[in-house]
Amino acid sequence: MLQEERQKIILEQISLHHKVLSNELCTLLGVSLDTVRRDLMELEKEGKILKVHGGALAKTFHQPFQQAAVYAKEEKMRIAEKALSLVQNGMTLLTGGGTIMVEFAKMIPADLTGTLFTVSPLVALEVAQRSSVNVILLAGQLAPNSYICTGASVVSQLSEIHVDLCFLGTNGISAEAGLTDYDWEIVQVKKAIIKASRRVAVMSIAEKLETNHKLQVCSLNTIDFLLTDLAPGDKKLEKYNQFFKVI
Image 1 (cartoon, rainbow, N blue to C red):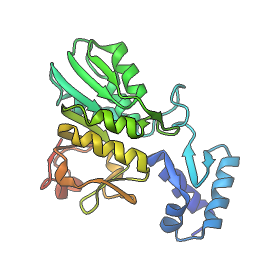
Image 2 (image 1 turned 180 degrees about the vertical axis):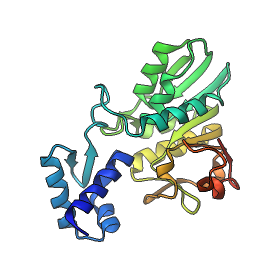
Image 3 (image 1 turned 135 degrees about the vertical axis):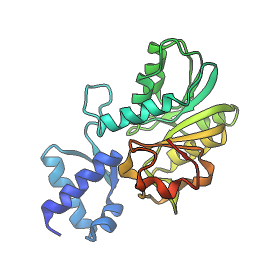
């Protein structure tokens, strides 16, 4: 594989997941760790990524308070609109974080009533300033790349609540592996979110279907709804209908 081809794939993975790990890129590209490191160094010199220990980050995702471009913004807005169809006045909601969840928060109606728990300061701020919903931020150690509160204190707080519905983003979802991620701390928080929720709605752009990472969050049998930018009857979603309702 040519260098230009490798770097194109690396940029695509970073756009999709906001972060890449060097060892996972070695497997994906079929090259050595030294080759991956050289590619990441060149991409950083060109100002396209932020190289960190063990991998790289998307520059836009690393600066959430600036007006940075959101990858697949239209698709994520479409998914956020679908998520609103599940929300009713008086519900107790719980959300994870990520750009797709921020798009959802921006669409919360001003007259919506209820309570929203979240591990994302960005989601909390968006909802608090846009609606009359009672917003409760579950605070802990702030993950520097995803801006999600993690750690034992967050997991403990989640163990003390029970909500009607949670909304989760994902870095990978497949029929075989279920919901997966690459960050241990975030996985523990997502597991606790699911345990605290009567129903679980997963929000994911179609590009992440049939992708997986090394850590499992849950099996598909745990999920109640899958919201994507595809039409529910799309052939790519057929294999998921046996597990949950596709919206």
